[in-house]
Length: 201
Image (cartoon, rainbow, N blue to C red; front, top):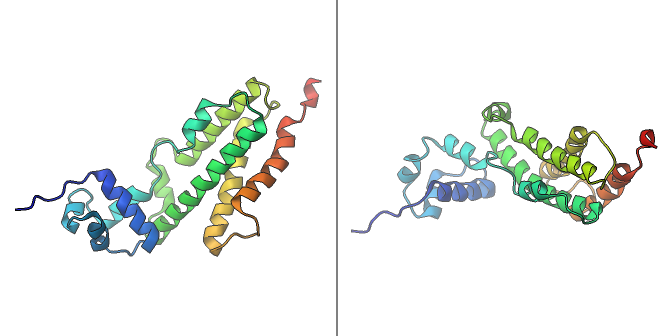
């Protein structure tokens, strides 16, 4: 007799996420189970309903992939290079996050309810991480003294916006690639960060 395949919760979540993102929230649990090589019952032993599975596999969990890079820095490289590196990571991050949030909307799950389930909502955590990075850049005199919280929110929303509009429209709202958008954004933002603080002169 063939023993049933043993799978981890993470394998289920990774495969379910792939299926939901490819086919939308209406994808059958049978399709997910087939991808895993198990029965639908094996999935429901771990996750009580398809909605529970959807929420668990698309909700933000844990620190973002770019968080470790930011928490290590900034280093002594030119700040323009480090800012560009961060914005590129955020462009990839928000492309994924926007697709996940769309799945939650289609499923009828309130994003406000999801955010309330975290001790610290992911957007607040992300602002805190980037604000701390900017504060360290101020201390190292890589940039002028600024309101780090406001600038962190400005950076995050400026990268979230293009991802959200691209998802809504099915194409980029301008002729720019994300790489070109990042370059334009750095050119606009950097002079304000590097400008001398006239009140200290």
